[in-house]
Image (tube, helix red, strand yellow):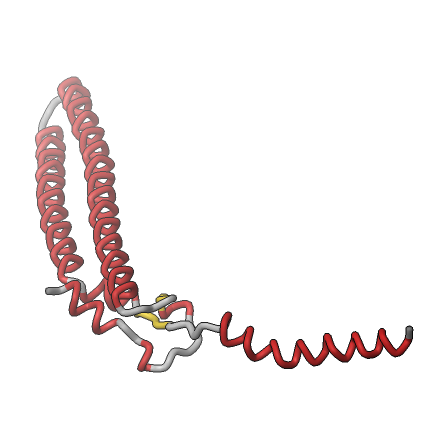
Length: 169
């Protein structure tokens, strides 16, 4: 009985030695990894620059309107200084109304600009993700990471230039 247990254990051990390399070749697949510098892609993507320019123009328009409202308030205050006490009180109501409309305008303009910026950035990120995904699938990559997550990545695994070239076509 003891001999058969030892013989069975030896047989299982030998089978494991011979089957191990065979199983390893069946199950082992080399992964193809790469990374991209997402911040660089985002900054150098043509659509990002176009969106920034459009937002800047919209911001300048909003700032011009804001300056116009401030000038109206200053004009009302200058007029108020020349009036009698009773007329000053009435003019102060008009000034308060203008100040309230300026505050409302500031809030509305800020919210609009933030929404426009977020919408533009969301669209740009979707474009980048699609190009990275399509490129990875077409070239057999299993994993493409953001370089910010890496402590080290050899240059040969950096796909940033290729992705930028595809995006800016």
